[in-house]
Amino acid sequence: MSPSAAPVLATVPKPQPIPVPARPVGAERVNSANAAPRCRHQKVNGVRCGSPAVHHRKYCYYHEKFYSPNANDIPCLEDANSVAYMINCVVRGINSGYMDLRAATSLLYAAQNMIPLLKQLYLEPSQDELAGAEPENDAAENGGAEIPRG
Image (cartoon, rainbow, N blue to C red; front, side, top):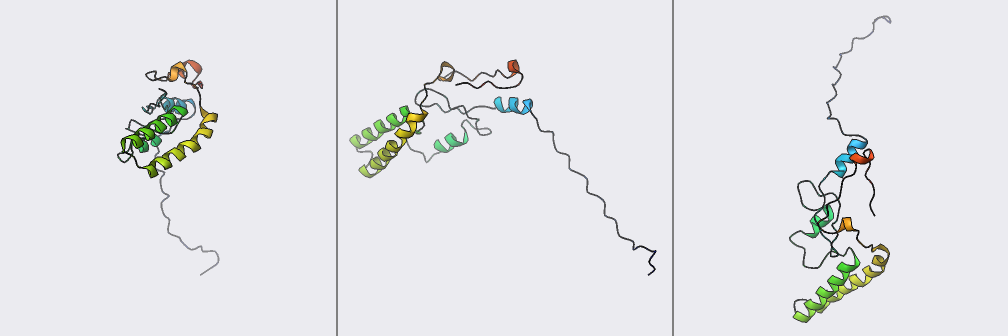
């Protein structure tokens, strides 16, 4: 083989990129996230959860697990009112004989550990957060940015 003759290589066609649907960016993405259906869980104090619901479901990921068929009647420990309600449920369960002392002790211990945490987290609900009040979407009026409420 002479030095001037280059070997002939087989050419493989270059793969064509697969078209990807355009994803919303910037304000469009924020607006579509804010427009997503919200979790329908209502806390003991009357405030709705407000997290985005799982696709084609009524609740967010956390509350979807909470409302699963294996969940019991103990409320979700998310604020001071729900902890007080749970303590009341435990006392009624012991009094009626529905709950044994071992389960009650575990639940009351969990409530006891939640109380110091909730002292830092408890907030009074605003009028917009009360049950029945749907979150307003002011994004169109504010250049695509959602105004934080609190």
